[in-house]
Image: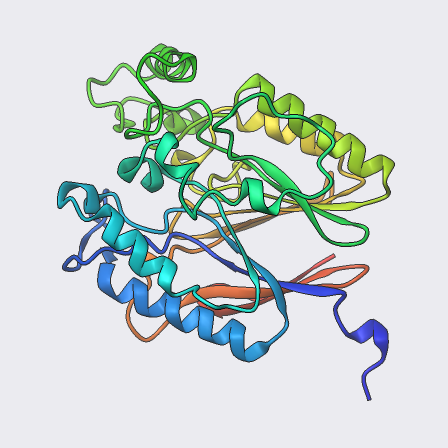
Length: 328
């Protein structure tokens, strides 16, 4: 018979980069891997069914890019979004949706805050730090006493798609940041950029000062309340957890904050880099997990997981291309 300690305090599901579209398979941006647009919907369905049958996840972190940008070219964005969201109809757990670059290829922020993909408002709990930005998609919630989850908006400062109005201060700041480093006419191209500078492309983004301050204040409150924290965002923030071209523009700002609170921050979960990645930062004992993208998983496999939270560790049970691991 299992002891109480052998049972998790709670569990949550995790998945990234479904990028569904009613489209034929095609090569990715770098022409290195096939993308299976229609099959992605079946893989999402399989993941949801798996969580239902497990009957133990309290919520799911959907780490962004739930539909593909190509949907907008066919004026099929709303239909594609309806199709993927239907997979979550009637599920016995909450779903936290994070916004990635493909959300902004399809929709504006004004649209997204009124859509089911805006889970910041309904899932907000005892939030003490007040956000001033009406269209901010960053928030925190506590699913279990002593634990807090922080959801970041990695495209706060961005030129990505139609997310930001071109007259907005965030768009203008993003353009200034990009053009300062990236001299290409095509700002999604890293040509001529070396090392971590290759992250300065338009399909990435950054976090503004207000969000960074909010993150710091939220973690300070969590520390005062004796909580452990899991942070998540669409874009990776550690150079060793992903291909450098997929990094957040101001990843170091975020890392500095996480390091300042390494006594309470357990892990950072992200997507964006479809190859996935993992790095344990032994200096501050924070685990950086980048999930493989469902969109590039071939038929017959998958890439999602269930994370069991124990008092002294996170245990990730990966399915398919997501590797299982124990994170202490």
